[in-house]
Every structure is written in C-alpha cells, then in structure tokens.
Amino acid sequence: MANINTVVVTTPDSGILARFPTNPASSQPRNSATPTRPPAHHRLPNKSPALRARRRSRHATLSALPAAAAVAAMVSAESDIERVLWTEAEVSARVGEVAAELAADLRARPEPAVVVGVATGAFLFLADLVRRVDAPLAVDFVRVESYGGGTESSGKPRITADLKVDVAGKHVVVVEDIVDTGNTLSCLIAHLEKKGASSISVCTFLDKPARRKVNVQLVGDGKFYSGFECPDCFVVGYGLDYGELYRNLPYVGVLKPEMYKKD
Image (cartoon, rainbow, N blue to C red; front, side, top):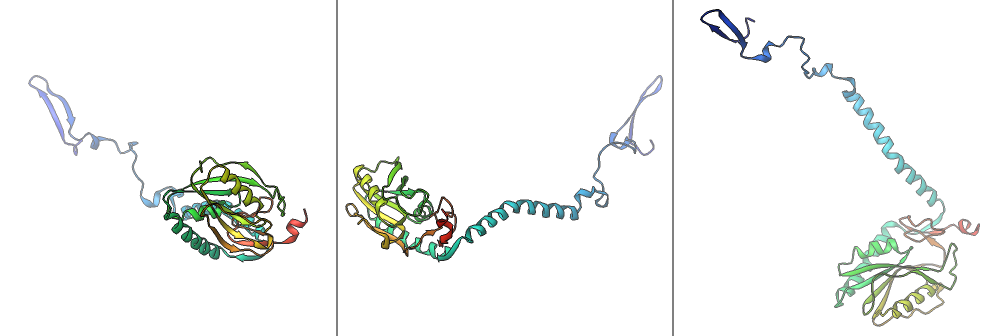
C-alpha cells in the first residue's frame, strides 16, 4: 500500500475511520483478469502472415471454380465451330458504325422511335446497338417462330409473343439477328403496319441475300440497315443459335455440319 496514494478519514475520538485509494485501478492485484493485447510474438497463430496467405490462396481457388467451368464450356462450344467469320473486335466495330448511322437518322425525327427486337436472336445486337444511339427511343421485343430447332425456315412464321408498346403513329425500327428468306421479316412488317406504325425500318446484324425468297417491303420512309452480308452457310454466335446453343459466343462462326446433320 506504500505506493498507493490514499485519503485517510479520521475522527477525534477513535482515530482512523477509513482509508480510500485515490487511484483504484492501481490497487488491482497482478493476477487480474483484465484483458490486455499480447505482444506481436505471442499472438494467435491464425493471425500469422503465412496463414493469411494460405487463406487468400484458398479463397482465390474457390472463387475461380465457376470461371473455370465457364471457360471449359466455352472451349467446348468453340470446338464445334468450323471457322470464324467475324471476330469479337470486328463485330464491335461494325455495330458502332451501324449505330452511328441509325442515330443520325433517328435524331432527325420529331418523335421518339420504337425499336423492336426480334427475340431471341437479336438480343445481343439490340443491346449493343441502342447503347450507342444517342437519340430518344422506346424498346420492346416480339417473338416470331419460324425455325423451331432446325436449320431451315418453315416458311410459315407466327407471332407467339406480341409487343407491349403502342406503335400507332410511330416510326418503328425492327432489329433482327439475320434476314435470309425474308418470310419472318415480311410477316412482322405486315403485323406492325396493321398496328398503325407510320413508318418501318429494318436493322439487321446479318443479311443473307442468297437465301432471299420474299422481297421485303419497308413502310413509309423506312430504311434498311445491315451489319454484314453473310455467306450461304449456317452461322452461330453473337445471339444466333442452333438448338438454343452458341448464342453466347462473342464472335460469329460457321457451325460444323456434323453438329446439325446428326439431327
């Protein structure tokens, strides 16, 4: 107690009545349970740099598993491609050129246009296209079935999911993944015209004139925009599919004949 400052209370009769320490904390015994941070060399092993490094490595490995699976799936899909027609860079550059042309025309119109994507094949092209068009517009989708699961158009397209946006009195831009026979596109243009569209343009990623069976008639002052002229072969990638596969390829390639002739 000699090292502790105290206050002593006394009485005239009996002397010391009580003794109080002025620093209670200093009077705690040495074996107190008050927690203290141990020195660095005494800290728990799970805080060691080596263990932290192992944990980071394990986390990185686990995080990479989904990506590795995706890469494996992509490699498998690419093995079905006979040759690449247009690379990812070439596709991006051409979409930018088409978007610039379309944007210039839409900006000159007094009212916002309605861009109608033909599901499902046009979804990538439409997304990349409209993000580069600096003009007011509305976007909607329509589903027209013609191919089913094969490589040849049935020649009898039918609309299975209609628009939600009202196109009456508006300029409509139909966005297609590919125009070949022209049957699907002609059916859709007639459908939109019946809905009251004042003018109709077509913007297709690929145009395959060698397969044309129907002369597509635009409406009003509509215009035909095209990304690439496609040779007469079965292509997939960038939204185009065979049996709902290959849409996610970032380029356009020719599918090996054995992949669809086996069906």
